Structure formats: C-alpha cells, structure tokens
Image (tube, rainbow, N blue to C red; front, top):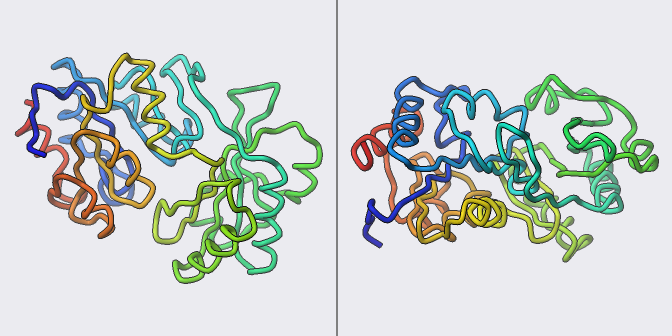
Length: 274
C-alpha cells in the first residue's frame, strides 16, 4: 500500500534493533526527528519488549507522552503518570511449568514480577547468576522461583528463556506442546524466547493504546525488526522494517529502509513528515 502521509496520526516504534542504534543508543538525529514529529502533531507510541523502567530514558528523551506498550504488550501504561491502561498476567502454574522445562533443558529462565499490593514495583527474578543473566541485565533478584511463586504475592508479567536460537526453537516446541493455549510465544532477539499470557502481543497492546487515544490502525505507521513485531506491523496500515530485520519481518513490512545503525529511521521520518 502506498503511504498516504496525511492519513498518519501515530508512529508506533519498536526500540531495540529498530529505533535504537548499536548498543541500544538513541542517536541525536533520531531523537530530534521523533521530537519533530511530535511537534508536528503526530503521536509517538513506544512498543517494546522492555520493562517500563528500562524504556523510560528513551521515552523521556523523545518527549513522547500518552499510552506506551511494554513487555511486548503485557502492560500498556499512560506515561508519564504510569497509569495502567491494560495488563495481562501469566498464571503461576504456567511459569512453574517453564521453570520445569528450564531445569530439564539446562537453560536460563527468568520472570518479570509485579507485587500485587504495589503495582509500580517490578522485579526481575532468576534462580542463579549465569552468563545469560549477565548478558541480559545486572538487576536480577536471585531466589528459588518455586518459592517465590508459592507465596502468591506477585503477578507474573512475562518469562524469558535465553540460549542459542537452535536450542530455543526446541524449547519453543516443548512449551507449545506442554502449555498449548495458555501462552503466547515469541522471539524478541535471536537469543531471547519470550513467554506471554495467551493472546498477548504487540498488536494487542497497540490496539489498547490506540483505543485510549481514539485512533484506529488505519491511522498508524509501525516500525519493527523482530518476530515479536510482526503482529503490530500486520495490524498497522503502514509498516517499516530496517534492513537488519529478520527476513520474515522484512517480508511482512510494506517498506524496508536502511539499517538501524545508519540513522535510517531518522532519515525516513525527516523525508516523510518533516
């Protein structure tokens, strides 16, 4: 579909691998381009697998306000007030099943938790320090996951397996067979397999965010590079993938631009909207 820029009212932006350059850097040119779009009256909605806290510095730098999609659609928040618009949690029995699989496959698994009596308190929990954990974050709370879940004080936002992609594909099949109908499974990087509540995706989060704004997918251009972005790229009227995107993503997108390492998003926004 040919881009009709006058019909676009919102930009839905994936962060890592798309808006951000190497080493998760928001370049000055991209920051200025996005702020320029906001000044023109376009709404910028971040749609990321990151947690609220892990995405906040980028949101604040861009100056985007309103609904943002976090945890691949598990949580939608109105920012900067952090009012929860939509949230979907995974059953603790499902997370326990994933821990069983991680033990059997000798692979890393961790879970994002939110205290039921403190909705803004997010915790990243894993059982043991590991090379995979160090690659992901330095903010883990290490404890036996079965004991954490048995207390019942937490909502489970999402779980993550980290390993090489061939092994993750095997784990994916095991999860699909053992937890069929209870989860959504998606890759957010070639070494990250995410476990979300059934029906949750960036598309579901995008729908909630757009409804909050009084917009429809026909007024959106979405940007993404990984498997977890395909649902929202398919939902939006227009979609853009950087050339570094996974092949299936490039085939889904209506437009493919240069790589995320070359300020390609900024160049596209400048040419199209500024």
